Image (cartoon, rainbow, N blue to C red; front, side, top):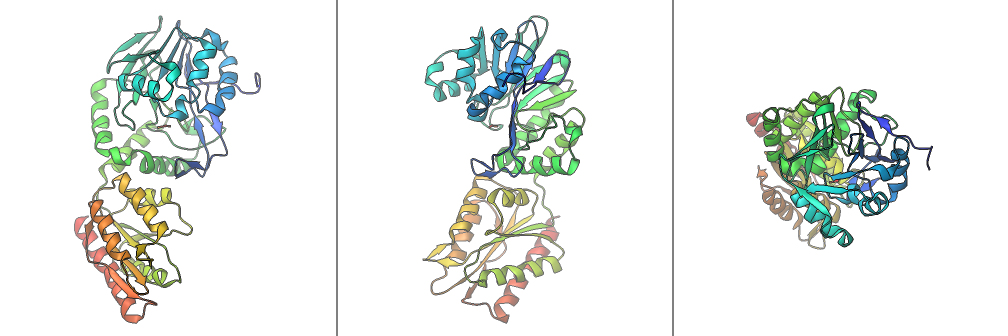
Length: 401
Ligand code: FEO
């Protein structure tokens, strides 16, 4: 592979030496429609330093890119900003091949790496929040970002080049031949950054807000922000920072998500009536039939929504499996400030609506009604009830905006 893959210069002393995963479409349950990248960075300081590695199958690509600027065995230090295996899968064989003088991670990171890779044992040196590491002619400072999004997560900052290595934060799943944000369309960046935030960072929004508020106090000059996935921010970091602030705040909005599945189109008909009511009440609606919408897209829509309405037929006394899947996923992501409601058709028992209500309550969604249930195929009366449900919900959303 040597000669085929090249490093990409990021700043005077830093090169991107990661890998591009064009084919991945399922990242632990998140649909990565545009693939992803695993970003690793090489600092050409007196102490040559590798920041993060890549997912295990991509080690040859990373080594080839490193070799395009320096022989890999010249690497002195490795810093692991995040121990999830898309960034540490290649760490043990990299250590074995390079034999670095030292390997660093946060305190929790050192523990997590030992927990993932028994062979590394106590090899990783823990660094404290705010600690600095001399690379000879340059220096790295570490900022722990616990639970953004793992306990071990940390940033590394290279003051000389004003570059922040931000691991998963400010990243996105986007495979591309371009490495920098200003080479990629703004719409694509906003879409993929939103999807990434919704599916990875949303549960930790209060910590994101805290981090953003603390950034000015850290006094970091940010010419470049280099995450572990997707493009490197060299022009538009302020834009993504502003979006993070908005997403983390999750203010009430006039957007509604109507998610549903259907067996014989009855619940689908109900969904249509709910949507008409919402729309006539002034809400914009993301209609998400689960036979064609992936859970990770529902999560993205829910992040920016003021209300979530879920519909399910009752099957064998239970909520429909696809609806249970999405509701369970959403519950884990802890969206905030949502109103909600439920609806569904049934044959003889009709438990699904009550089960959805329990799930919504567990998500701290404020229910605006007990939901609409309809026996078999909805008649005019049932559809009117669904329409009213949507219209009432839109009215309540307006009151909160
Ligand atoms: Fe990209 Fe949390 O790993």
